[in-house]
Image (cartoon, rainbow, N blue to C red):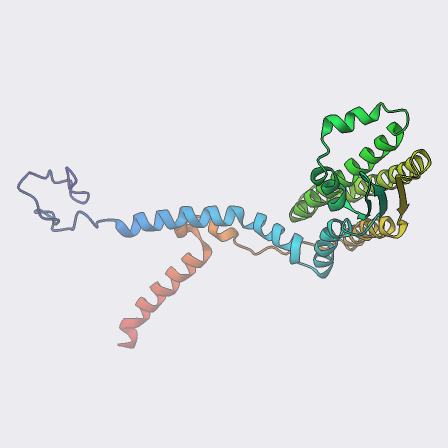
Length: 272
C-alpha cells in the first residue's frame, strides 16, 4: 500500500489497512488505473505505428503486386534448377563401372559417400595426369555451391525489395549467379575434356548444356521482372496509422469523439 493517498496526499498509518483512503474514500489500489492503462496503450500503439511502414514494405515486397509474386517464385527456381542433371559421369572405381547424373547433390555426395577428403583432393591437384581435370572439377563444384548459397540468400533478401537499395540488390544477385553458372559450365566442360583424354578407360563424361541454359534463363527472367517492376514505378501501399504516433488526447479522432460527446450532453437538457 502507498505511503500517502495519491488523490488527497493523506499520510497513511499502519492501522489504515483497507484499500480505501480513510480521508477521501478513494480506492488507493485502483486510483488512476485508467490513465496508466491508457499510457501503456499509447506506448504500444506508438511502437506499432512506428514499425507499420516496415511491415507494409515487407508485405508489398512479397505479395503486394502480381509482379512481386512472380519474382518470389522465380527466386526459388534457381535452387530447384540445380537439381537438373548437368551431365553424366561414367567411371570405374575400383573395378566396377558406375554411372551418375551430375548436379549439386550428386557432386557433393560423390565426395562424401565415397570417402574423399580435402587432403586427398588437394594432393590430386599436383598430379601431372589428373591435376588439371581435378582443378576444373573443384571449380565447377565450388561455383555450383556458391550459386546455391547466393540463390538462397537472394530469395530471403526479396523481403527487402522495397527498401532503398532493394532494386540494386535484386539485380546484382542474379547477375553474379549467371557468372557462377558460366564458370561452372566452362569448368565442367574442361574437366570432362581433360579426364576423357587422360584416363579414357577409367573415366568418361558428358555435358548437358540445356540444364545450364535453364538456370541462366531463370536468372535472366528474374532480372527482367525486376527491370519491369522498376519501370512501372509501382508505389508501395501503406496503411495510414500516423494518428497513432500522437498521444491519445491529441489525436483528431479522440478530439472529434470528445466534441461529439460534449454536444450530446449539451443537447440532452434541451431534449428533456
